[in-house]
Length: 293
Image (tube, rainbow, N blue to C red):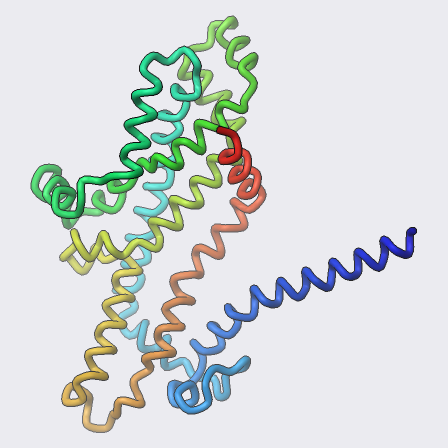
């Protein structure tokens, strides 16, 4: 029996090693392609190890380092700010909805659910943001838009319902206010779901380029994703218009494919750094917050 368990464990370990390699291999191939020569990629395809090492893709992306660093700073500031504000506001909405004594709870739930099915559309949203709120060409347009996500509110509400009601009752008997119960008891007990939602919000904001496309015209407020998108568009324009190239440069010399891979590495870096801090809460928050009805 013991020998059977040992064999089973060995098989499971081998399976998980293979799965890990299947996950790591595409990222390694992406990293290798970003350090490869454009001509080698064109003629020989992707290689596990770049031969030779070529930094031209990163040199092209960072030819104006101030612009890239500024975009990094802007994206980091609005991603972190939106993450904290969004989690706080959505948890404040979810907390009363998780209480049984809230009057009109069904109406509020229907209102939140209705916004998941229908939206005002792009044109009304643009008019509201630019003409009424005057948020265009400000960093606030990144932060304010999408602060409340009804699906995340329902996830947090479901998690709050799973917290024993006796905790709230005992705190109320001891004279604690609703704000004290919420801030000092409910939120600390809800770290798994809050960390999960925070990760989702952060990744959503970090990968946002559509907001800059619609509302931002100032280069100093470009998000990282939008700036890299513009760099890729410039490369495509150069490839389509050979007369714009310098005299000693051909279309094959433009690092189009390797630049695309380098940009993917540049964008994915911070997300890979942030994820380990949320990992231990991620699975628990995702399952507990979404299974119960």
